[in-house]
Image (cartoon, rainbow, N blue to C red; front, top):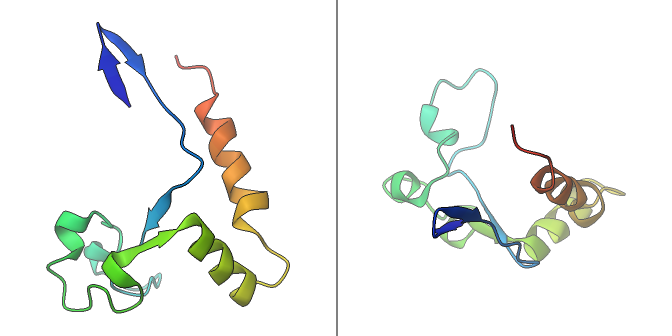
Length: 92
């Protein structure tokens, strides 16, 4: 996202990544840092990089993880199209 001459513009790139947490998500976990995947927060946590280098997964890495752990599910077929739909929603 950027603003040029007062006009907000957004750009879509086919390649991307997701940020992950240093701690496994559990409903009863009161550790708020598991929700803050920003690198500025995560890099100070003791398990930073435990699961993935730099707590990041490329879309391809995420797809491979989902294919391995959730047979028949797909980031590219289920989540990615929804991301694009959300970007096209009219703003109010």
